[in-house]
Structure formats: C-alpha cells, structure tokens
Amino acid sequence: MRVSLFATCLIDTFFPETGEAVIKLLQHFGVDIVYPKEQTCCGKPPNSAGYRKEARQAAEHFISVFEGTDPIVIPSGSCASMVKNHYPELFKDDPKMYRKAEAVARRTFEFSQFLTHVLKANETGFPNGHGKITYHASCQLTRELGVKTEPLDLIKSIHGAEFVPMTNADRCCGFGGVFMGKLPEISMALADDKVDSILETNANIVTGCDHGCLMNIMDSAKRRNSSFEVKHLAAVLAEAL
Image 1: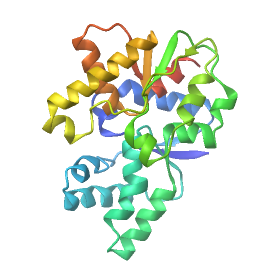
Image 2: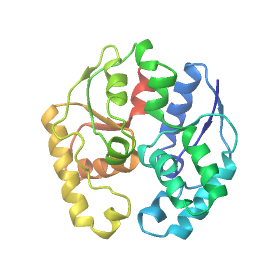
Image 3: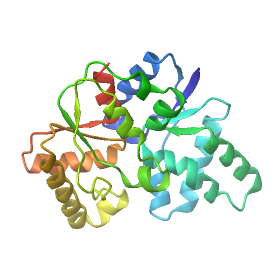
C-alpha cells in the first residue's frame, strides 16, 4: 500500500520528531510513503480567521499537489477536518473545484483513523510501552471528524503501559488557532484548567492528535513546572514498537 503524507505546518516547523515517528509507524506496517515536496499550509488558519479567498488559494494548491488515488494521511485532526469538511464548503459555488475537493476529501484520513480502520494497528498492538498515559481529545478531531475511540483503542493496545482517563478530556485546551492570539488570557486559563485535569490523573505522559493543542498544554505545563511529558500520539506509539 502507498500513501501520500501531509506533514502539517506545526510538525514541519516545530516538531519534526513527530514526522519521523509517523514515517516509522507507517513503514513498520508495510506502507510506502510519498511526500510531495510542494505541499504547504492546508489553509486552516486563514479559514478560521475568515479569510476565505486566502483559504481557497491554499486549498487549490493542496488539491493540485495531492491529486491522484492514494490515501492522504494527516497527523492532525484540525488539518484533516479542514480538508474533509471545509474544502467542499469553500468551493460550493465552483462545480469543477467542488468535485475535486470532494474527491480529495474522500481519500483523506486523520492518522489515528488510518492506523485503526485501514492498518488495524490496534489489533496488532505495540509491545514495548511504559508508564501512565492520559489523552486529550482535541475539538476538531472529536467534534468535526467524529474521531473518538480510535486514539483510545491505540493507546490501550500498548502493552506495558497504563491508560488513565482524564476528566473532561474533550474540553477545549484553549489553543483554538487564531483564538489563542486574539484572546490570550482566556486561552491561557483554559490551558491551565486542562493541565489541572492532567495532573489529577497522575499520568507521566499526556498525548493527543493535534500539535496545536499539545503546544498550548506544553506551554502551561512549563509555566507551572509540571513534570509530565507532552507527546503526539504518533511519538508515543513509535516509541512502543
């Protein structure tokens, strides 16, 4: 099987180790990876800020770069939701681009979706886990994509690790894209509430599927000198191979 990988801006810019983990996992399960070098932002930030023209330009570029028949794997719920849910909305008045957007949307998988529904990685399991792991359910992953059980099934399949549920796991962490920049005080307060929920679990690792959320949690944890690690789900799973 061959897939096209969309790395996302945050992974490319700030968290390349997560990209390496994604590649390690896909290759472990026998997947050939194509990485189009022409890829750029999916258009989520301008779309969230109301800049539809700029969002359509980014979407048109994405669609041209990822034309074909291979599944498109995205290690981010918010970026995957942008492609699957919002690309068709952006081109609802352009029949030709709408058809292309729909075709790309059908081929797009968020990373944990692909691991569970296509590769059945949760059934195979991961042999070398450790520690207590809790999980933050990011907003767009959970509400827009409907991805709820897939990350949990993957975490629970890590042998040697203990999954600890978090109270209000699906409550916003305060990142919210441009929301974080426009209303930083509220964003920080929400992040602090999320860290409180994490600390209640006594977990030494908190994971999730969106680096925006994890970055906001990481910032709050650093300000409070909290000792738990913050890792993308791909990194947690890759370390357990």
